[in-house]
Amino acid sequence: MSSHTPTNNYRHRLLPLRQQLEVQNKWLRERLETVIPALMAREKMDMWVIIAREYNDDPVMPTLLPQPETGARRRTMLLFCRNADGSVDRLTLARYGYGDFYRPAWNPEEDGDQYACLVRHIRERNPQTIGINLSREFAFGDGLSQTEFVQLADGLGAELMGRTRSAERLCLGWLETRIPAELTVYPGL
Image (cartoon, rainbow, N blue to C red):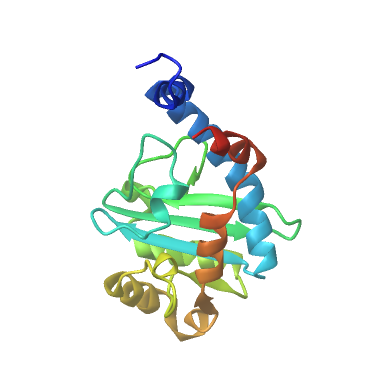
């Protein structure tokens, strides 16, 4: 077999795993800084709450976490909060941090119950629209489990739960959108 076969050319374009992770994290940072704000503005969503548990991930969760993370650990909560200037604050309520990708917003030893802390953050921000990952149509937008939904509803109460709506279009938009840096690489794969 010639050393110039398509298979060999393909292999030579792949980076070592460590470098792949660095590139993926660079892309993730850019996506979090550009795609999320644009999608939240498009959908007129003030807040997006993503909750998943270990071994029961929301389909979107792994795509929002920096490498080498592959999914939720214990219970992982991500909170995206749109500001008046269009920027988005990214918070995590989880036992394990994600570097500077998300600002830690829960310390179990100081803040107590994870859901109580989430509700405090939501009340402080007072969003008019809160996206949660529920969908009748698309599995990729339906990642909030029944148990997590009930706990969220119990914590938020009727008034704040009345502000929730499906974030399916945020989920799908996040999964389908590629930044220019990603698009330049795809033809070579």
